[in-house]
Image 1 (cartoon, one colour):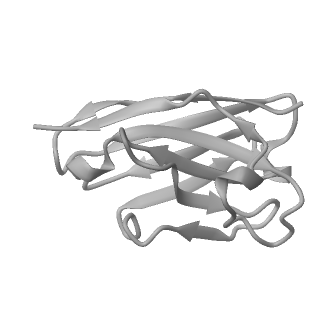
Image 2 (image 1 turned 180 degrees about the horizontal axis):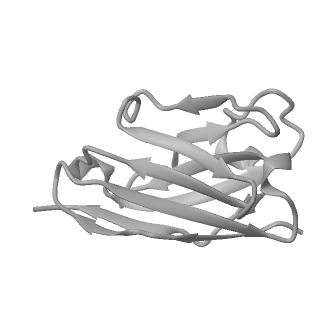
Length: 126
């Protein structure tokens, strides 16, 4: 059973950068579609970026395109989200999630992702 643990969250000023990580254990992360979601207080959980299983295909939400970069290191079995030019609107708890069965896709609603980490808080504030 795949287990996911996020780390790297913190507090940064607007315009700052942060990289969060999702360490997997129990299985090879590359065999799963993986996605970063985020949830701000009082808002619904939303998809941020995702990686297709076993292929270098990615998707980014319009509001992070050009600022965030998703990547996966198969040796360390870890997924990363590098976040640049952060804005106060990026403040949220960020979750990594994984699932199988999406084929060549990764963009899918949160309800289709079956394995989740505990989340890491990202706060952007001056």
